[in-house]
Length: 84
Image (cartoon, rainbow, N blue to C red; front, top):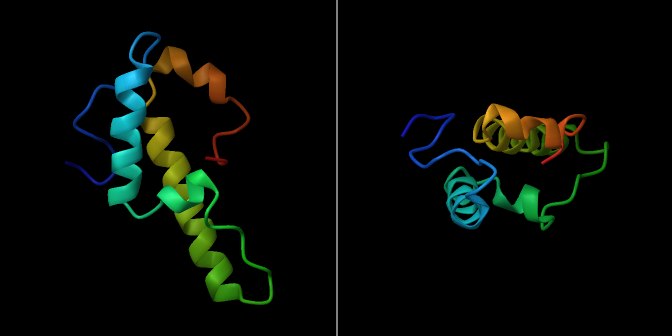
């Protein structure tokens, strides 16, 4: 499996039920699931290192999700590309 994509089908108009489980597993393996499910909240600006790490993980999660959408499904996340 490459670092930015997966071995399962991208989200289409017909495969959400299988895709969502696969996507969750991928995000867990990449250690960014807590960003997506809300368990990890944005740190305060006081801790710059922690904030940078959180923003990096958030970007990674958003990128992974975006790359695992069929192109015709990306319209549904327009404006939220950086917000998993």
